[in-house]
Length: 116
Figure 1: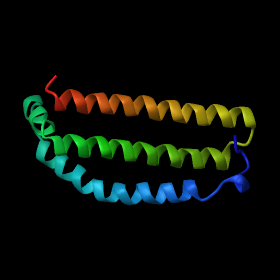
Figure 2: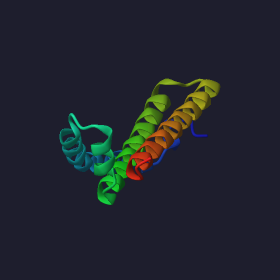
Figure 3: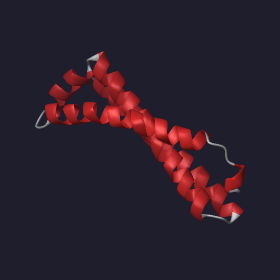
Figure 4: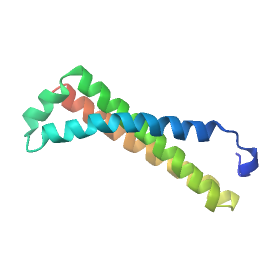
């Protein structure tokens, strides 16, 4: 565990910038998706997500957004939680939360994509 910020490399910095840039591109897709599905019923949503391109882009969007979120929260934890036990607990909770929400998002997209 690296609780000393001086021990950290530039990996987290670069990851945050790359995922942020990818998110900027994917926000255009998200805006299109939300506008096109405004007022749609479940059948129309399932039909939209049945398109493999839409489903894949939605999964990539969620994945990149959750990586970006986890990395950003890890930076906040590094900066503000200094006691080692709380630091470890906060980082573990951050990871568990991100994984659980990611699984829920993945299953939701797959259910819509495969018409379940």
